[in-house]
Length: 217
Length: 217
Image (tube, rainbow over all chains, first blue to last red; front, side, top):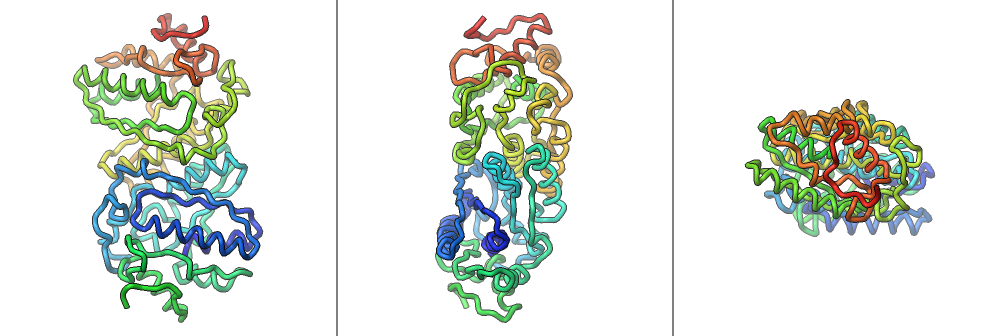
């Protein structure tokens, strides 16, 4: 939802966008990859050309410890703020993604690297907090000799705020029916992990039906 | 030379060290890989156990532009400060390496991530300068919730200073005969690229013979 809305946000403003999706051994990776393809196809059908980069980092994350990864334990169920959700932190993930995107951006002449972190992530994930984003921006600006900057337009939004933007702010609605949110390694969303619960709450708060299928009621 | 001296620096202080070497499509990668193996074996024979991580990033760097990479143009010859050497910058490389090392460090419980950048790198490579190292440290400290910090012990040394340390400061000398410095895709060092020239100057300044073989006189 966050990345798809981010894509809509920049396309709506007329930017030429390159997307980066990372295969890093997460349980939901193959479903995310499918979602990436479908979302880019949706925009293509509506006249937006998006250049998609798929970047394999499975080797780099091979020794990383996180329950979000295939090599880790079970995905915890429950609310996002629960202590148990800390098991889903992938150490340093966003800085790795941002730094690779920055190197690619400098290589192809792109000036902005964007990430869809938001306030719902702040409690559990240190690499989603405003102070981290500011520090990453500073490091990347220095690393690229001022050529690339980092932006996070949803940094102070919550999930419902992102959903509201995606359905109302852009000429073309974000196709949330194609997005993948669940952390688990299964086709249909579990509805029980913190990531599913946050999504369900966002739709509930806006009084909108979530278009995806859930395994559990 | 820089990485090997960095390894000696930490082993000499009694640290348990994990090394990270990255395959990222550079022309000299296969020679560096061989050097890594031989240097780790040297320390092992002298009673130091080093855990070596080899991390394949060829896919991630696939679309990057740099003459240091196999996909780029020729390695320029001449002095390091020459404008032409800018073609050897790999955009964002050190931040990518540092951020992956930081994620691995957090995963395995290591507290320090170290990099062998030095003052000879500052003119050409933005991601070797003191302000970059400070910014990367800040981003990584925030990204890891304070668990990992970045150090660059040779930040203000030049190449001769590093060489002097490696030959004099540690109980066990750094095996410079096993190190790889040349940027080119050839077994014997070319002696002409900026990287070779800086190495030759360092040995010359200390009045020591360089133990490696050069293609050119």
